[in-house]
Length: 268
Image 1 (cartoon, rainbow, N blue to C red):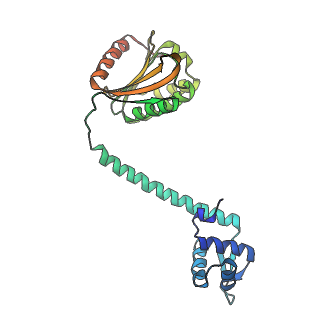
Image 2 (image 1 turned 120 degrees about the horizontal axis):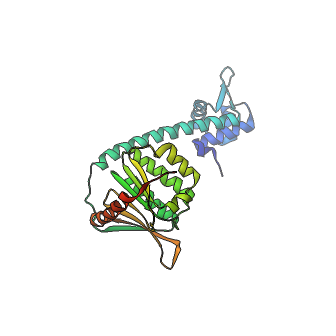
């Protein structure tokens, strides 16, 4: 169940505020009895509630009386306090990430020879793909010959395009080679995004060529993400394999380059 403690009040503060809603204007002594908060703590609790603007006091009366702020107002104030706290936390965490990014990026681990990982299923495959796109520092090559059995072309087209834009913002060169058949299946939203954002970008280019069948992505010429269809049912998804091997990636890049030279610039 939801509790005032979820919004930052202590147990005693929550009990005192709820008791005030029931008693109406009352003294600290009466409130201690109604809320079962010890008399030795009641003034500290009331002062804290006043600091949060959840309680008002009538200091002219003797003894001093207190009244609760209306619940809708009180909850809005508690929510505002929590949101400000979250904003401050977000800024703090962003600063930590910036500092750690600078520190960790200075390390240059050796390239793993023949290291590979795999993801099975559409969600895991997409997660692996965009992770590797986000890791690119110099160049991304994307080759797609057919509608992917792994991904929904509409939703994933939007997601991949977003991560391509992020790569371009990092000054990564992006080259996309597609079959004409695949171009015709792209949703209008992807075409609109290409026309308005990507087509004029100096680091982005798309070409088309017939007789493309497979789908893969080449990252920084050292890493290849290959989509694998189910061998027992080629129209169904199977996995995404990420292989980090400079020699293999170089061979893939050589084959890509020859097809790229003969391909036609995309015309929508």
